Image (tube, rainbow, N blue to C red; front, side, top):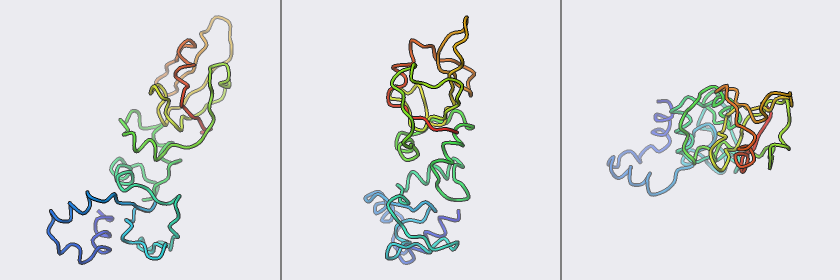
Length: 183
């Protein structure tokens, strides 16, 4: 792939070493990438020019774990080759249900709205989960809403993707740890 060729060009003479030796180096130190998918070896003096599109200053908010970038690339979750947590959360809304590793969830999570109980959850407003709940009921990318208080209907939180409803009695516990954003 493109990034493999780029990595070869960046590391250059490192590939003279045996494959086994290279694998040991890679495993022994955690590789960091910028949001364009360029490994740390391609940065110089805090700047990256390796992608050829532009010169990027590599700041803390642009650095991600290499396996996070690789997971996003493998599952077609990149936005034009770039890692964008907001775009990935939106894509997960449509790609149900990928089994997402915890390290990836942490990388794409954001600070959002939190609700301690069902009574605090707004009515008639769609929200996307941007951080999974502690018990796993709400997953990143789930689109949910709470309907009007209509006589004869059950209260709870509805899931758009599954056309399902979490009954009121289970909502308070399920909301623990979950954060939400507007889609």
